[in-house]
Length: 612
Image 1: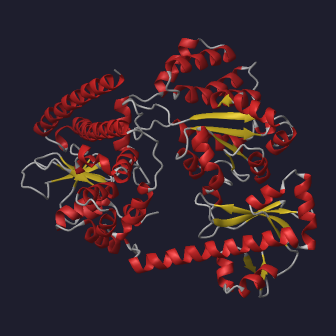
Image 2 (image 1 turned 180 degrees about the horizontal axis):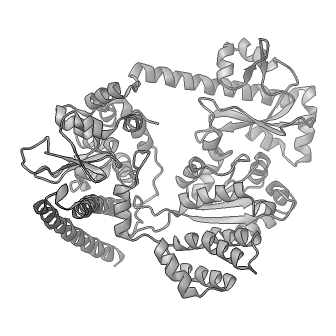
């Protein structure tokens, strides 16, 4: 979590603002005379559920706790950050400390790399490693694959690795921090991995961050992974991603299997777009790694896992991550990409792992990929396979579990096909199911209200803002095309500060130096974000589309805020908000509506022109 997010979580915006203005309760929100201009009727509102504020009077501005303190105290972002950090009890990372953290992380990488080299040397040369070499031969793993993936062997010794690495100048407490050595009961230390086939796990950048270790003598557990460390977090890693990312981009498809051996076999047979979840259910972080490379993901699942609840939960994570609408990524023709990705499932032959299928008949594996089922089909099979659809109870459960999934399908034709299928399964009229599905799909107005009024425990995500900034930061030639962009379009504090700094300098290094150190990580993320290959004209179209959409988002936020206040005012009557104020807000609400309509019309004309 960044310092900015941590401060937002720890501090209540109502408490912060109340130090500068006298707040009064107004429904779920608070109102006050605006602290930034003179007025007789309160037009300044604080929205605690959203962590934001807005002045509906002559200021017409809003933001979060950082923008409020900056405006009220007349300070820059860095000063506001330090003021609020002190109040929240959050320790900011100084540049010196940041450097120390980087050095510590680099030290862990070096330790893991040294361990990988040691284990690999033993696998190739040690007599005791014959059992590991025989196991790999039986699994069909070639010498080239062993070398390419730097497979290794850990000896059946209490402290062989510890002594080796200490001899290389690493301290014992560093080895413990790297998860390679653990403290023994009663004192002393011992190696974590003993008499196991060692599989180095690398991050996306190719650095060794931990190990997967397979038992060779029947010891349990069969597979033992490195513990969580500063460099190793299993839920945020995919085995083989460092080698697969190029093929994933090139083929436009990522295939996720479960085990290490599956990845080794796939890559050995030339199928380099395969990675492994390392035996865990899919997480949002793992799906996030794939989303940066492709919009198409296929999961290889054991046939016996069809009704497994843990499998279904992992698939639900993937489905939600891949089926969300992405306003951040316009397509290169000026339109909107409705789905961020295409998610499919391979059901493996019963009792076989991917590596067995690949080794026995590689063409069968390619056929399974071609015949992979859409995720919705898989859910149909998984849900109906464990229900008795001959009774009303089973039919009711099937509708309850499948209808929400169908309702979220963006394509109307596809949605109708699945409604027809469900209708035939449960014997309920298709029109009845369609009506219930429509009720489950929120309208645009409801989405806007929900974005304002629903409680949020994390800082809101701003994907469109970040995509726009990534374009500007990585494509300097777009600078002249950015004149229509306004800082007010950026709701996220980090994004607004980056845009302001970018607008004031043409030099990347000066840009970095001008930013508070707390924004460096965010800058690095945007600078390294993978963007689709595109021509200069396509990039200009993408930026223009981003600018228009950001303007629409800003107006929608303003409109939703007004509608919520009007609703509360009308329900409260004259007790909290006087009639004149309601009428004023109603009149003001008409203005952004007209602006939105104008923007939409311009957007339609622009997209139509791009297609011609």
